[in-house]
Every structure is written in structure tokens, then in C-alpha cells.
Image 1: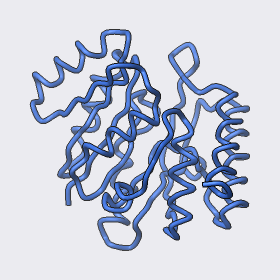
Image 2: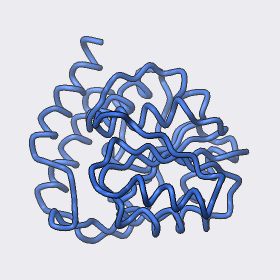
Image 3: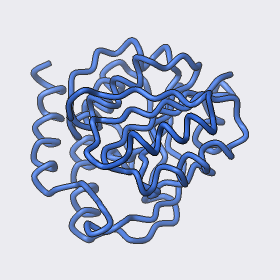
Length: 227
């Protein structure tokens, strides 16, 4: 089976070489697709150099900044593997966790796996971010009658035929609740495994803002009752 690693990025020139090195080190037949969301730093130059070193690296560049959701959707559209996983470019998640995230799908046990930060070792979380994540996850469980611990996790893995057949529309961080809602509405159960997490600071480039939590709440209600 081939794993498609979708890596949305925006102004991550400093972290890209290391995260790509870590992803390449994972012993799994894979393709890496980086979606540059029209970065304003030297991300394009860094990716060109990475492609020179690794011609198999696939890079898609947005002509205008459209948001993480748009980058994820672009990556899904370009993926050709049997399994798809999303990988942020900011070094907060460890690609060594791919094995435990992917194996339940490879073994044919489940179709969707989330890597939960709250089940694994983690550090660097802000209190209000962690509380917001738990509240959004609680609301997800309440609205969709499920029981997961980390709806907002980056590490979401799917059988490709499932996620590529779900119409997605979110351009920003609402992509996370949209994916989760539509997976659950289609009666796919989400299997969780623990993953490690080392959060970065806002000074280091963390992009999450409190207002995104309110939009995530709206998205959960929208896809539960209005879509």
C-alpha cells in the first residue's frame, strides 16, 4: 500500500527541511505532497532545493493565500496513494508516529484513524488552547454521538477512497470539524491512537487564534443540522 503524506504549509521555510527529512525517514512506501499556500517568505526557494535533492517530492503552489483548508483539499485532490495522512510543516507532530496511526488501516481493521495528543506524551500546550480543544471535542461527541479525545488533531489518516469521495468546502481551519463531521455522518467510526506533540509558541509561528474556536463551533452545528 502507498501512503500519501499531505503537507499544507504557509511561511514554514525554516522548518521544512527538517520535517521533510523526518517524513522521508519513515519506512513506508509513500509520496510526499507539499502544498505551498502562497507563502511570502522563501518557502518556494526551500522547496525548489528540496526537489533538487529529492525529485520524487511533489510541490503544488497556490497562486494566492487561501487557508489551511484549501491547502488540505488541494493535497487530497493530488494524492494517488491508498492511505492519506495530513502532516503539518511546523515540527509539532512526529512522523515516527505514522506507524501506529497507519497500521490499523493497513491491517484492515478500520478506515479512519486519528492520532490523539491527549492520549500520548505532550508538552508546550497553552492552557486556553487545550481547553478549547477539549470543548470542541466534547461538542463533537455530543452532536454526533461518538467518543473521541482530539477532534482538532492534525494527524488524521483515512483510506483514500473514503476521504476523496467526501465533498469538502472549508478553506480555513474549519476543515478539521468539517472532515470529522462528514466522516461521522457517513457512519465511519474514528479509531484513536496516542501520538506525541511538542507545541510551538506564537513567537515561533503558531497560527491558531481564539476566534477560530467560534468558527469551529459554527461548523459543527452547520454540518450536523444544516448541511
